[in-house]
Amino acid sequence: MNTASTTTHPTQTQVCIIGGGPSGLLLSQLLHLKGIDSVVLERQSRAYVLARIRAGVLEQGFAKLMREAQCGERMDREGHVHEGFFIAHDGKMSRIDLHKHADGKTVVVYGQTEVTRDLYEARDRLKGVVIHNAENVQPHRLKSEAPAGSAEARPYVTYEHEGQTHRLDCDYVVGADGYHGVSRKSIPSDVLREYEKVYPFGWLGVLSRTPPVSPELIYAKHERGFALCSMRSPMLSRYYIQVPLTDSVENWSDEAFWEELKRRLPPEVAAQLVTGPSIEKSIAPLRSFVVEPMRYGNLFLAGDAAHIVPPTGARGLNTAGSDIHYLYEGLVQHYLHGDDTGLDQYSANALARVWKTQRFSWMLTTLLHNFPDNAAYDQKLQQVELDYLFSSEKAQAALAENYTGLPY
Image 1 (cartoon, rainbow, N blue to C red):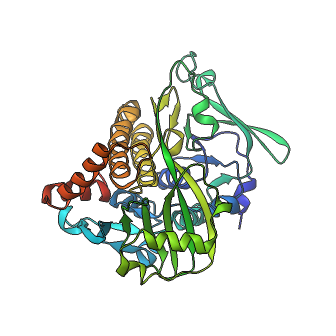
Image 2: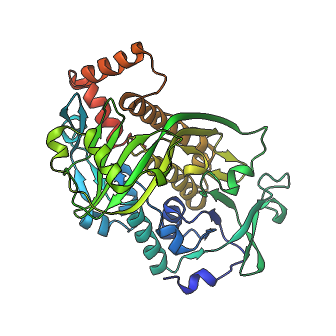
């Protein structure tokens, strides 16, 4: 349900946030609780945003941010705390004990759609301004040469809503509008540097109203390709298999998907798999992407607008959460204490952690997937890496530390 706040068109605010996904909503909520005004502009309808199916493994830092934003009650009540996960390989199951190897840390399995829903409800409670169906959003005057403090120095954002053009003056613009959004494109090409790696396969994912095959996630490495068994709730499961980029959803019936998934799981797991009609089925290509810097003048990039990781290891939303942490802290220091240190260091601090999560996602993706052009040497190294992982407590501790979330 859209609230009356979505039809409010203020002419000025302190922080304009472009993008009404979990990153933008979380920042808006956190700032509101500190008395800092913001307006969120979202290109799509609320119903569209809430229909997005995304991963739902939350590291400790993100869960803590949700609680700080007063949005963690349902997450803590309905989310599933996982103290470990399995890697299936060579026909057997090996468990990574997160609680043991990461000093008691765990993760929470809670769907990103539910995170977004909780954040929307929180913004409604506080009468936060979230404007949906905002079209042709365009930031202006991001790096003004005018004297600081003058009206001409402030950035502003224009957008169209229900056929009318609106202007929103602000102090800062936060681009949390994803890879295809306008924010990153507003930075001159001679300023922005892009890093990208495209993987030669994708994930075919199926959502089904069936009980999960395992109480903890299973990452499976198999000669036929990678597979993942995940869950959203006790009666809602999410499964994935590695497929070539040339595949299409139309080529995969539900029956074909379930049969292929079973082939890639250890026999005892496959025998317990409960199948059913797919609720949603899609293929997601795997890629890594980072831009530097994440600040240009009074524009700050966050989340997918600045970086993308393969879904292996579920770092996407969690890395966006770390961006929001650094940006939130910087904005609070600026508005409440007159200290710009956090904002000045935002890009460097955020990117330092972004690259570490990129390394982890790349490592896990490389370890568990079949690469079509892998030589026998590379295949042997994958096997040796797995053997080493499960023979070394320190290697498992490093994996657990990254999986539960590096410190901010």
